[in-house]
Amino acid sequence: MPLLNFKNTSSEKLPEIKDTGLKLMLWAGDIVHDNKSDIQRLPGYDVYVCYGYSPGLDINIEYMNSLPNSHRIYLCVLDVYNKRQMDIFTNLFLGKFSVIDSDYIGNTPSLSKFIYSKLLEKGGVAYHTEGINSIRMPLEDHMNLLELFAPLLTYELNLRRHYTEELIKEAKENKLTPAETWSSPDLKHVYYDGLRCRQEEFIIKQESRSPLLRKTCLYSIENLKKYWSELPLDILTTQVENLPTEMTYLYEYMPQLYTFLLDLVSKECPGLDQGHKDYMVYIESVEPITARVSRCQHVLNKQFYCKIIREIPLLVPALKYYLDTRYTESPKRVYGVTISKV
Image (cartoon, rainbow, N blue to C red):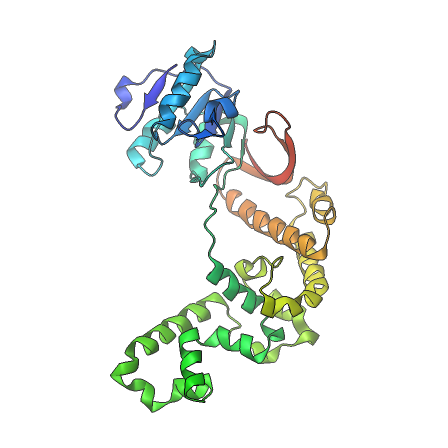
């Protein structure tokens, strides 16, 4: 089996790749899951790219060497954040791939879409190009939720949009409102330098989060759609399926949010799913309504992603159902973005 270590190899020492129509699996080849090497779990690819972690790399090599076609499979070790290594890899496999896919386990990086354009042959297709990030940011999610439902919040919840928990606590201890505390001359004392600095930073971050932070008084249940129509996408698509206990009363407004998001989807998506309106099947095939809201949000995020891809020469995105063949024992029908090269 050809092992190509781009961390230690110059371009002069690499073989010439004459074959085309190859299949590439990214981020696999150096890990073992449930006693299966990556290459055993993800068979049928001609090239695997990994970082080269040990001892998983050796186990994958051992399995690969046991295959009858091992001499035709390339295991590439490289650091995708190293420009020199990526340039050498890209030049070696320029226009060689009919399929590019990525592993579905772990946290994975993502390649520049320009690299996909270089690696794919004409008519080639790339799947799962966004990478996986399982690191959650609960505080950010919570703050986005507050902005999503700002006109409907209780007084206590609304305070969290404007003041840090630290300042709210300070206000309670002094039997003042947060506004009174923040405007108090006493807060200029050096003792409060840290609190004051953190509150100022919080205000700046909140103002950059939403253009409507200080305009919530203009909105209510009567004009919720107008409010939502002026929010940025990251707030509109924050997850709503598991609201905190103090926000569960907001579930009663899910029908309005669903109607708004569905209207938005119907305006944004035609042309991206090849006119088949797969997105309606995808959205309406689940219950309850919070799950449908989440699917609307998923579609909107993918639609925005497609817009970015369409700016790259030779790449054409599609938002549709396709068969995910990475799961060799039982391929899954999934709804997502594929990228083709024309």
